[in-house]
Image 1 (cartoon, chains in turn blue, red):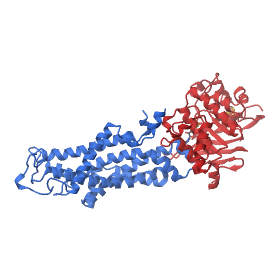
Image 2 (cartoon, protein in one colour; image 1 turned 135 degrees about the horizontal axis):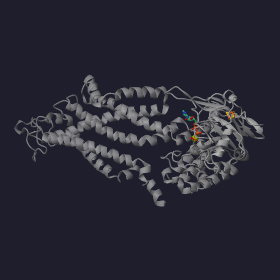
Image 3 (spheres, protein in one colour; image 1 turned 90 degrees about the horizontal axis):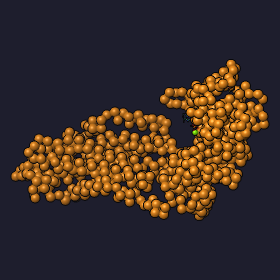
Image 4 (spheres, chains in turn cyan, brown; image 1 turned 30 degrees about the vertical axis):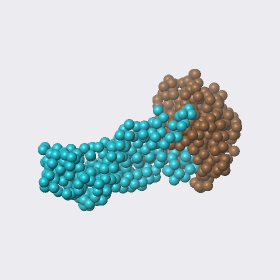
Length: 286
Length: 317
Ligand SMILES: Nc1ncnc2c1ncn2[C@@H]1O[C@H](COP(=O)(O)OP(=O)(O)OP(=O)(O)O)[C@@H](O)[C@H]1O
Ligand code: SF4
Ligand SMILES: [Mg+2]
């Protein structure tokens, strides 16, 4: 019994570190973040934009670790720089979407009535379109500076956060402990902050991790279709797109950026799994 | 002091279909301080709805509920606050009635803090005291609900209700979700607490043994109405209302009241849809003693002998 008590007082981080997928995910993600910081600081072996006519489509070597592309640009430096750009766009987009969506979703779920009705109707309209199509349409009308891409992705993901926050609030609101809180005469802000929020926190945090991975895919998709990052700047999606005609004889131009997309998406999903386990007190006790 | 419920009605509007559910159709009953009113009836007859109305969780559609002549349906905010200490509700499910993210101690101390029931310095001691009162060890304070058994959780729910210093405690099937082995302990605790704090109880249950154990008076509900009211001897040993008679006849062993399987042996048909109440006596579609007039006039709840009330025109006075 005494031991059990001790365990319960440890924080969520302790439980997170007990999950294998959580650790692997965190390592992958950390790697990607370090890589992006290096790119942001300019700590790259070559300038990602420098063209080198003497070294077109060079296979990976000690000088060009990931080889060069059809302009003689260093694929390694471009992949890292593309990673940074994808992460920046995605993190900005998901932060925006999360802040707006979670606030609206929680208020809608808790307040109900017309406020909730308007919010759900509007998000239903957004859900009617495939995410990438909607993002495409918005980028096409906004423009394709990085912050405009972010905004487009944010608009597409806001309804997801509304739904993710609203659903749990609706079910938690019906729990007996919320009814007890009302009978006990607790104020609405107190019930919302102390009793509802802590119980809807876990699915929301998990959703943030998952949405980041989708946002990275959306950004890549937009760039792939020519509506995200514009050449000569590097983005993972754009690199994959540009590598299409080259892949048959210069596999490195396709494989490395694709690998990075995969690693970051898998990493974020694993982090989501780890968080899901760590944030649920009932799962921990077993 | 007493709880007075006067002609209380509750309708729920179903948004999707626009139909009105008549959950309570004129409930009148008085419970004296220190007494326990047991409520029985088939599933869906409105027992929990009545509990929610008395606790102030929902408003009545019409009718009045008052405690020691202080209206509890009053909208005035100060009254709403005052009600906090008057009525508390203990729910059936010990798993959903405690916040899973809140330690046991916090869920009790929160009430003391919010309503400033004890000085800040005395809160911890008071939490210990409340846990002791319900028979729990002090070190449970630091646990989360999922680390407790169902019986322990239900004791915490009771301690939390007591923290608010209520006068009336509504117990909506408080032991039916617990292991049979711990039911008796919790029942004994409830009886001790009633004596100790002079509490008034409303005890809802399908378990006739529990009802007998704790209740002074019993109300039998059918389709949102009280059809019979009286003591154990009056209701269980000499039931007068045809519905009560069918309920009792369905369980010679005095076990689970209103069990649909056994009840089907003594009572034909099903409970009508509360969205479309039958005319006259709402029991007439199933009543073995129904006469033509039953379809037209709804019977009043009338005293047929001291403190024994029956709502049936065909019962001898
Ligand atoms: N919020 C609601 N909206 C619509 N109908 C409701 C609502 N709450 C209760 N009802 C209906 O009111 C009637 C009474 O329900 P209630 O929960 O009070 O029954 P009960 O006697 O407590 O049943 P049980 O023994 O199963 O707990 C039922 O027909 C139920 O469907
Ligand atoms: S009033 Fe008529 S229908 Fe109703 S219980 Fe009495 S006999 Fe039956
Ligand atoms: Mg009920």
